[in-house]
Length: 210
Image (spheres, rainbow, N blue to C red):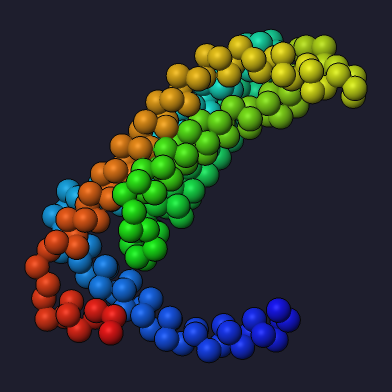
């Protein structure tokens, strides 16, 4: 199919879809505002809780690699990105995959929400901090010459050997993050279902997609 055909298809269905989408978002937003404050806070701040755990995972991984590579310098310089980047990445990934998808009406499957939450927790909040710690501490080890780094041909083998004990110890963190992501996403979907069961007002009926 040519590019012009794609443009014709998009232009033919786009206006109606946009109106329906906008009505759904407004309807869900109205329902969300009817929820008790505690549930609104849980939905709003759930990703932040997961992100805080991701920040702790980054600090733990950073500490392990520093110990293995005998790095004692620049503690704050390495700890700051290892806490901030996993936090921001986890929050953004969870909001995009779960929270925003629910509130936009794109995620109506409980199993899908739970799977997404678990994956975000384990990958963005667990695996990513470990992988991030490798270049951060590798650069410090090279700069301060605290460890003998390999030649170009042995880099992969060296880092796989160095990382093995870290991954082994951090496996519990990965599991915990996955479970916590499942818990948060299941709570969010339960709140979404409760939201839909709230009695409709006249405004809600007017906002329903026709």
